[in-house]
Image (cartoon, rainbow over all chains, first blue to last red; front, side, top):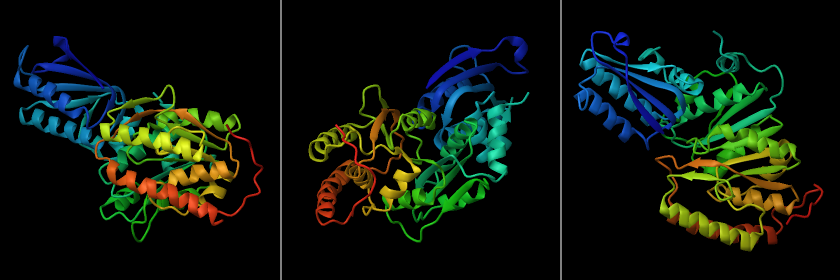
Amino acid sequence: MDITQLPLPSEQSTASHAVELRLAGRFDAHEVDTFRAILGQILDGSGSGAATRVLVSLAEVEFIDSTALAELVRGMKHCRERDGDLILVSPSDPVRVILELTRLDLAFTIE
Amino acid sequence: MTNRTLDAYRVWAEVPLEVEPLYSVVIPAYNEEWRIVPTIGAIATHMSSLGEPWELIVADDGSTDTTAELVRDLELVNLRLLLAEQNGGKGSAVRRGVLQARGSVILFADADQSTPIEQFEALVAELENGYDVVVGSRAADGADVANKSLSRKVFSGGLSLLVKGLFRLPVSDTQCGFKMFTADAAERLFRRQVIDEFSFDLEILYLARKFGFRTTEVPVTWIDAPGSKVDAGKVAVEFLRDLAIIRWNDLRGRYGSDNHPRIDQR
């Protein structure tokens, strides 16, 4: 899986600093450590300052397994504990269906 | 904005088929509560996008976890859940699923989505070329294998040599959990299957060769899914035992005969 981190233009940020993570490929248990490390750096402020609003683009994710879904939930909770959010953006068709079947579409903010 | 794939999926999920399915996908499942729902989601999305009537069969193999409840609670009207009172082995689950399938084309696919369903069409193309049995292969030229452990590489490499030498099968990977059959081939082969464990694939391919069904393999992308239940060492011993059992069964005439026209295979 590829992960690209993009700082958002200021007009897309709300009160807090926002970052977009674009994921591509298969997001499964093999990839969660990498995702967790990158998200940790974002939330802890390594580099360009801490962000609490994280947009995770899933448009190019072909498949997501339960471990990766759990990691997204974990990330969402961490963001919300900091008064931010982890927002899922443009999930691909299979990812959207998987989110619906697991009822996680009700838990996440999806744009 | 409408999305054709999602629309097709929702129709499949909510409206019972009024015609016989063209495609049947069978997923054998044993204690797959952690993996089964995303796999169903991926398969349902892709298969619905093809625009043909299709059905999904989950053949539970006596799971002791919540696999069956999870699948039932999805309430997908064109998904059939087959239950077993006790764990009978992957081969028994696949056989139950395949023999219940109504499609003209029948695929069985592992519950971990290790062979992504997007490769379905590549196998169908070979059925359309006249083959009766098409095997997803991790060993054929062009296959893309990721995260495979060393033990499984050694295991499958050894198996491949052994099987080719002993059984002269026209495929280099007998164990990939992604195999497709015409309805006729599926009926004739799975009715004769007697091995219920890991080596049932080998028996099916042996029978296909014995009865002259045209068999080929298609290179696939395969990702070793974490949590695999395959213990390479244990399975290797069972596999060697089953090689002998298959030959012995055949010598005793246990597989019977078949009136399918014999085809010379290389």
